[in-house]
Amino acid sequence: MKAQQGVAFRIFSEEELQQATHRFDEQQVIGHGGHGKVYKGVLKAEVEVAVKRCMTIDEQQKKEFGKEMLILSQINHKNIVKILGCCLEVEVPMLVYEFIPNGTLFDLIHGNHGRHISLDAHLRIACESVEALAYLHSCVSPPILHGPEREKSLSMRFLYAMKENKLDDILDDQIKNNDNMEYLKDIAELVRQCLEMSGVNRPSMKKVADKLERLRQVMQHPWAHENSAELDNLLGVGELSMSRVSSAVTTENFSIAKKAAMGLESGR
Image (cartoon, rainbow, N blue to C red; front, top):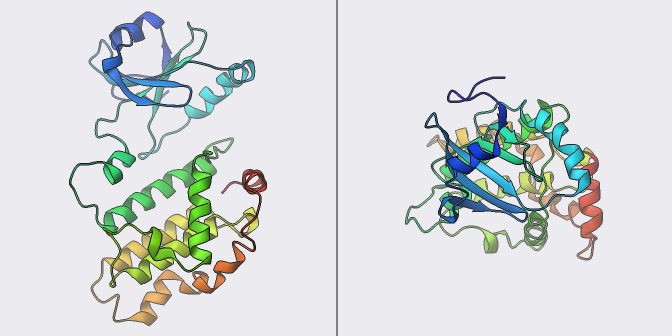
């Protein structure tokens, strides 16, 4: 398989990962999850890696492990962390990924680093994230769908704000102002379309990526505010209408479980 920083996808020994992570020293922990921790490690070839060490796994997950490794090893996208290999010598297999030194997007957007993240930077992040999702949905066989449980409450809050015309209440104060509110409304409408319960009504991630990129290009031109007709043409504004918000939520008491189940039926 394709090498990454001189390391091909392979099977690592437990001792090799023990040495790389200083015997899984707590000082090496760079991330936590519901089922384990992620450690920073350094292989003998001075290659930095991230080792995902899960603590629990059931029998069904073990059976699916090989299939998942095959799928993950296919991934080759600039915005998706590459998997370098795994360790099978332990009861719960460990995964080895390339190490990303600059932290996570969450750290960048929400961290206490004192930096202001502009709307253009937010939009670039969104564009590249959606491009990565489009790749997972369309270029990997079988497709990889993503929808963590913790995102459901955020989706519900967003849909409620859209329905009640309270979008301004949930927007980041650092990026909202009178000059860009129309852009933010267009972005919000696109998000609403992505949260449609029926997969038939949701745009593909490729279409979402295209729309976000067009919007970003328009925002970078000083004439965008003045030439509304050309702006509408570039954005395909006929497809982005705030008047369609009511179709996303017909009642406040809809079932989260049903929404999740229908969303998995046809991921886009």
